Amino acid sequence: MIIKLDLTQKEINQLLKEVKKKEIIHLELEKKLVHIRTLASKLGDHRFRQKIMRQFDKAYNRFFITLNSELYELDQETKGEVVISLKSMLGVINDTIDGLKK
Image 1 (cartoon, helix red, strand yellow):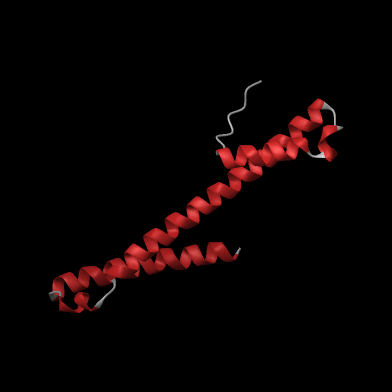
Image 2 (cartoon, rainbow, N blue to C red):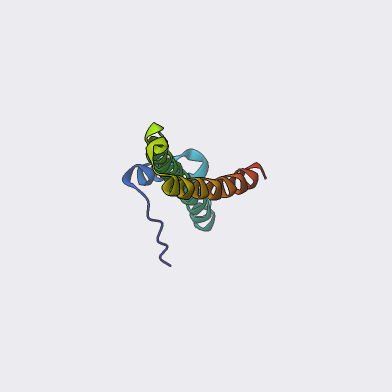
């Protein structure tokens, strides 16, 4: 049975260290595999969460830079479009905040 875990070299090294621990050496092969799969899954989940947070930070910083006094210099029609977009974003932001509180 082949399972694709898509782990980094660092994560593979962590798994190897885990396999060599005394607590797991004496387990049956089936239990060892379950233990290793569980740990590999946790490592992958952690990396995924880190990636999501890095992407959020990057996008937030890029967006925050655009909110500056130059927006005040736009013509009225364009300002109106910006206001509509920002209000729309506020709705999404508030929904996201509510979802994160759950």
